[in-house]
Image 1 (cartoon, rainbow, N blue to C red):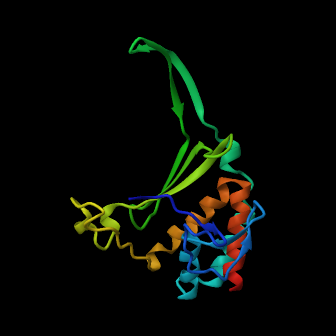
Image 2 (image 1 turned 180 degrees about the vertical axis):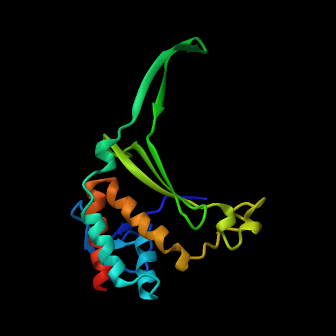
Amino acid sequence: MEWQIGYDCKVLDNDKETTLPNLVFIGSNGKQKNPYELSEILYYMVKINLIKKEEIDELINIINGINEFLDEKYKINSKIENNTFINNLEFYKSTITLPTFNMIDRFSNVIIEIMISKQQFATGVQPMVYLNIPISEFENGSKLIGNNSKNIPYGLFKIDGRRVELFKNLFICFGMCSKKHNHDILEILKLIKNN
């Protein structure tokens, strides 16, 4: 399963429900935001003591120390190869290369994938972070095989002590995507630490 995991949502965003509506931070875009998805998971991991507050301090230090950002260093490459005719129309065939980085969790086959892609609503590129979870990592994985989402609408992914490094690494990966991501991730970590 590929999960384009997020870490925040705009305050009062009706499309996204956060379990932490009372926690608010100012994002790099100047808007009020709530922790969402990944940030909620980390918040609850701290709350139930899977992650210690000292580990949040370590994450803050690591992310504060990042000075190389993927959106500045890696670009989409496009190469025009040749022209070709399709249905009597001439096209120029090109190949687009999207830089992609994969980190495999050492305790499972879960992969953190960062793909440099075109921005959706602007010019330029943006790193997109995905969590790729093999069916075998779901508690109900054997029931998912051969079924569709009407029959089984969700996978049960257990978050326990063996997932701590995975979720900490996700925060680090987001922190290295861009300066904007870095700002937001640091604000979220400070919010979690203080609450």
